[in-house]
Image (cartoon, rainbow, N blue to C red; front, side, top):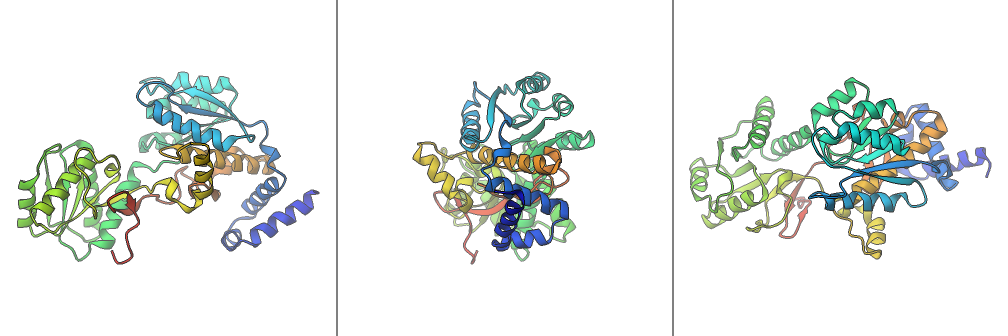
Length: 385
């Protein structure tokens, strides 16, 4: 198939899809050309990605091995016959960054994914930058690390949301849904919990909303009946608690037992196992939707389960990272741009939905969503709620 025919076919594919037609109309000529070339490569079987070597950085031993296995499973499934993978052991030990970066450099990889721990990048990003190796972390949320990378022009990208994304989404959920409610803000006394609650309070106060009750509670208690009495006395109806799953379960259980009608909201920490107290249905959380529950993941989830692979944890985010790299590599190879440049402000359709990195190398949109526990999982609340 001649190049001109391929280009016309790619443009026709884009024009046939309403979503992409709208995107193309708003893109610069350079980005339009890059996406057209990407489709051209897709139509010819993606041969341009041949020879691409990707380092998969994840633990192979210790307590984090199960997460490392999830990352490797997703990467291997996505990269089949499309790229070569090289496994790099991630120890998460203090000061391990420089040696890990050297291992990636020696492997011959031009891009690396994974990185569960901040320690794995601290001190090593300069080495990766000098070798022109792009790093995509699936887990690290440190704002300081990303600010440092941007300042020094290191090619670090983040598929995980920043620490501020959860705070912003919680404040937005409260502002949007509790304007006419008497609400409380609670923390469990730990530094992270207190910082979260204080940040949410400050954002809300800047928008003209004030909590009727602000307090802390002792975590890991078997009962919280005294706190329920204080909340009832304060006449609040809605409660945000920066608490872990079990503490929230105890709060919701004791409110129900005391016949105190309260709506509870928590953060991403509410994900986990019912241990030992089960979560009451109706508890809300600002958290990340399960990737396997997304419509864009249906086909891949089915294929994985056919092979007895469960798409849990980091499996699909890792798969998505490989998809992004393959697409960006096609754009870079066809346009002459670097891989890092190809990643910026380009919409990538992946197994986890559309992904776009901003100029700050962060996810362009906030992935946190307001979900509700239905007794089995966190799901999208009914429209009436």
